[in-house]
Image (tube, rainbow, N blue to C red; front, side, top):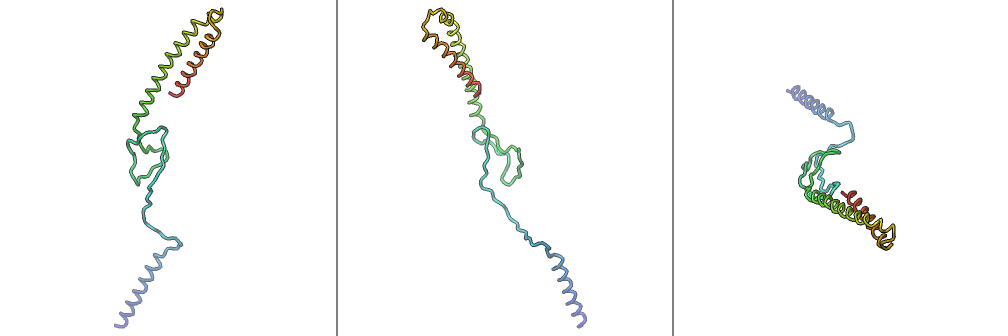
Length: 139
């Protein structure tokens, strides 16, 4: 009976030693489990607007170049239409100013109109052209 107890104690000792030494981590690191909670993320867009739809949920992985959100483009489209209309308006003004200038340039050459009127026609032509170029660049 003593032999069985001694063999059982030795067996328990060997099994315990095996588990202790076989599961011992050789590095000095510890492993922790948990979640990192990101509360604030800065994102930017090329145009301003209200976010219409998010493409990812919290916790999803994203990589560079992924589409994160879709903006409500009604404001952008409205501004674009206004810009196109402004260009058309300035084209009409420019054509009118050019017409006035072309009708009066010969009169300016022979002195039939005042120098001030001739300068006004030329400056109006330049101003209309500059306004048109500015609107086209902004479109």
